[in-house]
Length: 332
Image (cartoon, rainbow, N blue to C red; front, side):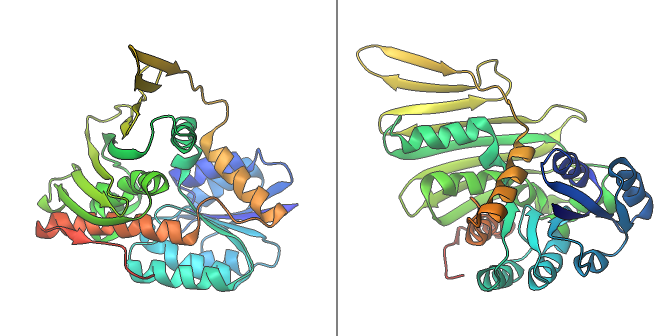
C-alpha cells in the first residue's frame, strides 16, 4: 500500500485527492493546508489525518508519496525537502517560479533514488496524446508549424488572490502557457528563441493576456495565445493547429469532433477522429506515476522537461516586459 500525503487542499488538491482515492493500493494518509479548515474539510472525505505544515507531512515515516498542490512559489522548497527525505514526489506545474530553483530541483532529482514528476497533465489528455502519436507515425509528415490557443476567465477567489501577483504566478503565460510550452517541446524539441507581448505588466485588475512566438532548434515555429480575460464562468476554450510537410492536425474542444487530420491527395479529404475522454487525464497522470514507482521506470515527464517548459514560460514574460526577443536553451 502506497501512503500519500497531499500538500495543498485547494482546487488542485481536491482534484488530486479524488484521483488518489481511485488508485488501487494507494491510501491518502494526510491532507495538509495552511488553512486548517480546508485541510479538515478534505480530510474528512477521505478519512485522512490533517496537518498545517508541509514539513510535518514530509518528515512522517508513514508517507511514501508526497503530492504537492500548492501555489507555484512554494513548490521548490517542498519538492527539495521531499526528495531529500526519500519520498516519491509529484508536483503540480510549473516545477518552480524561478529557473534557479528549478535547476536545484533537477540536480537533486538526478541524485536521489526516488521518483519525481511535474504534473504536466496535457500529455495525458487523449487529444494531445493522440496528436503526438499521429505525428510520430508520420501522419502529417515533418512537423513545422503550430498555433496553440488556451483561455478562460481569470482565476479569482483563490488563496490571497495569488494569481494576480505576477511575482507569484508569473501571469497567464507562466501558469497556463506552460501547458502548451511543454506540449510543443514534446512535438518539436527544444526552443531557441521567444518573442512575446502580454498584458501581464499593465496591472489590469483580474485580466491577463499573452501572445508568444517561439522558434525551435528544429527550425519549427509556433504561436501560443493564452488568455485569462473571458467572462466569469465561461468554459475553458482550447485548440491547436499542427502543420507538417504533408498535412495538418486541428483540435477544438468546443467541437463535437474535436481532433481532425487534414491531408491533401488527389482530392482534399478530412478525416475525423472521435476522442471521448474515457478516463480522467488527472487520474491517468497519477496512475502513470504510481506505475513508474512500482515498476522502477522513469516518468514520462522528466525533471529536465519541466525545467525547459518553465524556461520558455519565463522567457516569454521577460520578452513581454522588455519588448525584446529572448534566447533560451542554455545548460541546466
